[in-house]
Image (cartoon, rainbow, N blue to C red; front, top):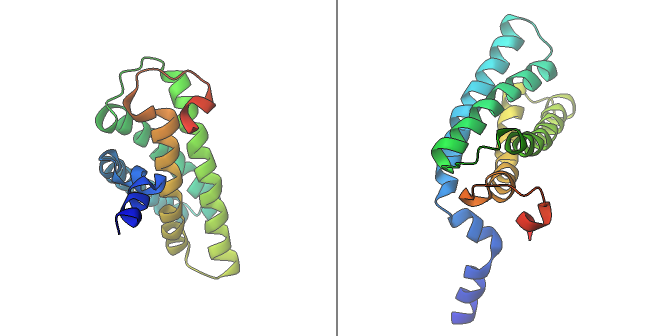
Length: 155
């Protein structure tokens, strides 16, 4: 029994999920997602913008809000290297955006699901990627500087 308990505790995925920052990350992500989905709905329904373009624009707006809230409120990051840090944040977020758009497109075009339901599915899947990437690379769990060497953060 102790062996199983030790193996369970050493699991990296569980270690990531047990960090207190994930709760703040989730709440900030929820707020950013409300902005994202709200803009998606408004641009698609009221301005007749194609849902893929709407999703791209709305996601970008949510990403900027997410960056600043996570930097200052959640990770309490004091790095003044904003451009480099935002570059990594945006890179991870753009990978997440690509993942989101693929899932959204598959949901709508292949499975004939409403675009808002497809967006919900995509958000759930992209959340874990975002948390891992932002906490391990962008904010490196509260460190103040980013070296630019990705090997330092993902090992």
